[in-house]
Figure 1: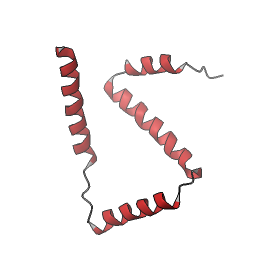
Figure 2: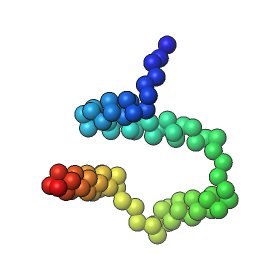
Figure 3: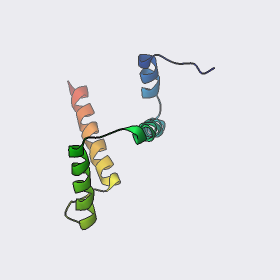
Figure 4: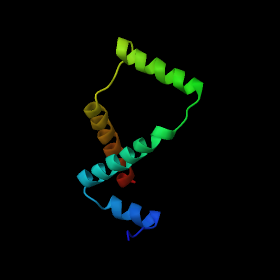
Length: 88
C-alpha cells in the first residue's frame, strides 16, 4: 500500500529537496497532467487559437524563445526577488 501524504506535508518535503530533484519532480508532475489531457475537450474557440499559434510557429511569423533562455531569465528574476525579500 502506498502512503499518501497531506498536501502541505508533501509540499514542505518537496521544497527541501535539492534544486535538481525539485526540477525532476516538477517535470514528472507536469508530464502526469499532460498524460491526463488526452480526454480533455476544448471549445472551438480555443482549438482555433491553438491552430493559429501552431501555424504561426510553423510559418515563422511567431518568435519562439529557447527553453534554456527562458529558464535562465526566470532563475535571474527569482534570484532578484529572493534577494529583495531578504534585504527587508
